[in-house]
Image (cartoon, rainbow, N blue to C red):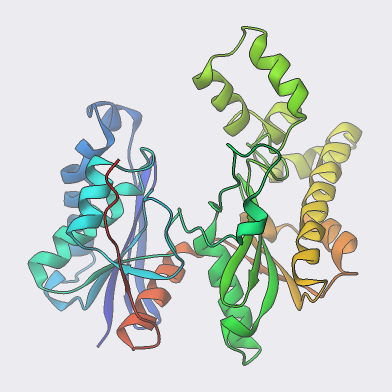
Length: 357
């Protein structure tokens, strides 16, 4: 028996699932109202509240925590880590509680997993955490020595897509050379080569997306900041949640954009095509890293359900390599499969060592 509890906290919800091997017994998204969240001064203060909801959810589905084999959580904002599994230990708990890279709801995942697992005397893991950073050193270099590119992005979903491709083609992940694009509220383009996420172009230096501004003309950004209209907080909000399709079309929902296009809105069509063109440009940017030897280009994430958008991207990049679509985010399944690989001895969990600031 391999029964895994999967925990994935987000800003306004906590997703909970239980898997028996590869079979999903249930998945539920527990919503948290703004009023509930507002009761807590700091994010870490939500720990007990969310832990109790997770345990209650499992109980409501008729599953006893005594029957669990392991707990797997979405990794929080740790200092840069390698891809794959890490066993949640005291050092990781300390890091996420007292010295995370940033405050984020995903930090609570490992804390909740550790507490539940400790009581049941079973292991707790995180898998492909948000801060996975395996970028090749040569790709970190920018035009200013004090600024370096970072490898953060949608690693969980993108690595899962690359590993699915490897399995379907009877290959080891380390023997594949593929470009994976996560199409969601933010868009990331990643290169998977020699068993590593060799490069990732995220919403800081990549395409604009439904909510993200993406890379911007740097002189104009300097002018914007010098204008006095923005402080750090408002500028970050502008580029992270008020950019992209939101700025151009007033919505972050690509389904709404496609309705606009179907109704004859030429401006919406132009902006949507521009986003597809940007995705294609950054996909092509990865090819020189492996001297053009790209086996496949994989499109994944929520927007990958759109035949219109994936069709536009495919038309622009299929000269490089065949295009495969794995629609959806599949985060819960990705976490479960990662945990199973560790339990089955197919992968070894790494040990996290805290980094004091």
